[in-house]
Image 1 (tube, rainbow over the protein chains, first blue to last red):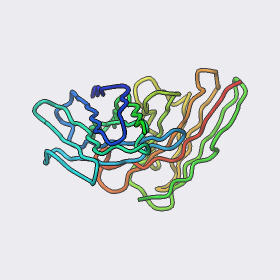
Image 2: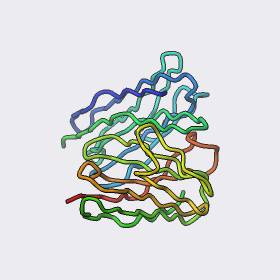
Image 3: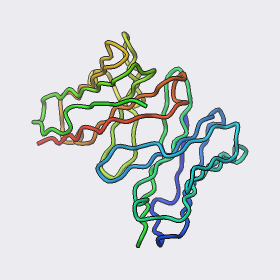
Image 4: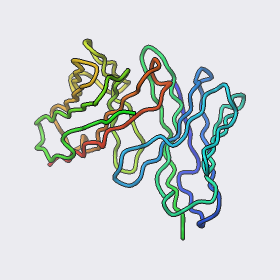
Length: 113
Length: 117
């Protein structure tokens, strides 16, 4: 089955700095890589995703890069703001008959003003 | 996207009882899933709810403990049976729209916070 490792587990940055979170996966058949943000007491929400046919995708201050050869993808947040503080989860789901949605363990990002 | 209503938002139950959680979506969706999230932990998939047939359970989860129904394309229930303190957790439903499975963004309900006395 799929194994997703996410690092770091906690990350503290100063407001305005950049934050990078990395995930590695094991199943080469995975072709869709989303990132979810979960604020305290709230539901997880998709913030950006990437498919295997591209290497990078950007949306304002957020970007995701994918290296299929090395089987890892990363979330990049630039010019961080206090409202970016949350838990971030990567996922590397694989579409199989049995179904499998594997999430990373999460990264708690704290942006200090 | 879809508007997902999950009920109840929280409950406190006695050991040995059962709790049924409902997930209602305002539009037809492709797939519906049930997750468990323990405090400070990641999301663990319990099962995929299949319309009109038995749910597909992940390793470690069984139908007797977590019976699931999905009578149509917009509604599903998860029952947590024979409750024990280890079942204290947040349970979330999620849906995908379009596509054929996990290759689409998931939209989550607000979750049900379950505590067992």
